Image 1 (cartoon, rainbow, N blue to C red):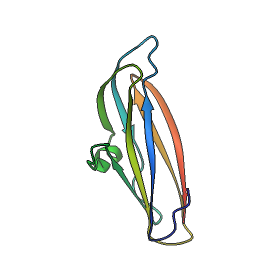
Image 2 (image 1 turned 90 degrees about the vertical axis):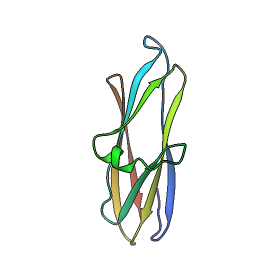
Image 3 (image 1 turned 60 degrees about the vertical axis):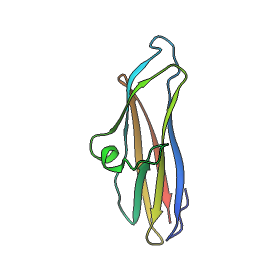
Length: 107
């Protein structure tokens, strides 16, 4: 994603319980990266709560995700200077199955 200096971009980080053999996920843990190299990362729930500290310090936990239900966080990426790059690996773990995605930011 391109994040010009002094601006903020948003991306939705979602995990969906697809059902199947385990129709209910007992928990989903969101684990993301912290600030670095001129970028600030903030993680916000759909209700507007900032859960950055939890996400970057052991993971933010969501309990009881039913079949076909989605849980998500908004990732707010802010750049403080130009000519920077930052890769951030976001992982979501539900009942032991881990998915990951890498967000690449450039300013």
